[in-house]
Length: 315
Ligand SMILES: Nc1ncnc2c1ncn2[C@@H]1O[C@H](COP(=O)(O)OP(=O)(O)O)[C@@H](O)[C@H]1O
Ligand SMILES: [Mg+2]
Image 1 (spheres, helix red, strand yellow):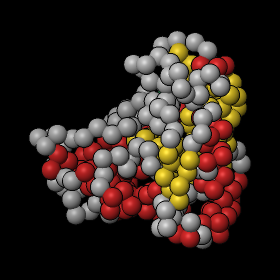
Image 2: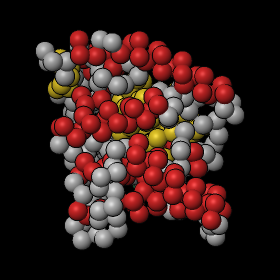
Image 3: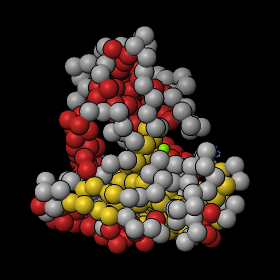
Image 4: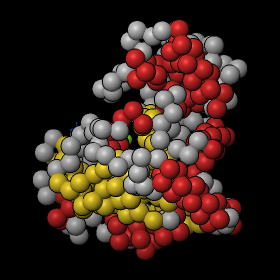
């Protein structure tokens, strides 16, 4: 608890910065807004009645068990998946219309040892690559000298921001997991996005690297004014940095501060079964007794929140 006792002040300052950045931009809209949203995949309702609001400049974690629909939410925000009902807006526009301003890091895939692309090439792909149907920026299809120099400068700046200068020239397959993740964050950063959608960037990193990457993303959020929605399994490495959290479970979502959301009362209510949140002396939070998300291989859990929230998984 005490480990993050000073979060209030920093969060308030950041919110003020975020609001200022928003007002200075095209409009003062929220970074992310979902209203009574529902989504289905393969005919199955994944979540519904989801209303969320992320301010510009905020650092927000998207939490929930495997299969609760976190990656699905990111795909909705990217415009890759349509809502079944309700509405969504991203950076003041319809999902998919703001893709050039979004830095997206898909859920982790490791690079094979043999991949010969260098780190710097991976970062550069973020600028050139048409990774999810985004038109090429800056007329890079036939770049002139000035464009090439601009692109090089952007790539170099992104690499410097994540501190990857030492290993960006090495083959990505030979970089460590933490180094690869920093280079992928640089790739997401290279278009100077206003919004980061990061899908489990701490996954498969050891604890020191989880802490370091969390700190790095927070630094980018504050210094570059990038709004961050970061998907995570475990909230603990993020505790010092979070403005708010979104928790997905049992086909519903709740949003609020860590203190509001990650409590026995709030999570029990969300899951529809008793869930206990324990707080260790070092401030780490442990959630005990949460049921699995409705999984693909078990269509329905008889002990879970399914009955309590029968309307949540009408299929
Ligand atoms: N293309 C698809 N068709 C049907 N079901 C899917 C599809 N993609 C994902 N799902 C299911 O949707 C649920 C949510 O998936 P996902 O958003 O990936 O969860 P999370 O990221 O929280 O682990 C899971 O039960 C998953 O099996
Ligand atoms: Mg996922």
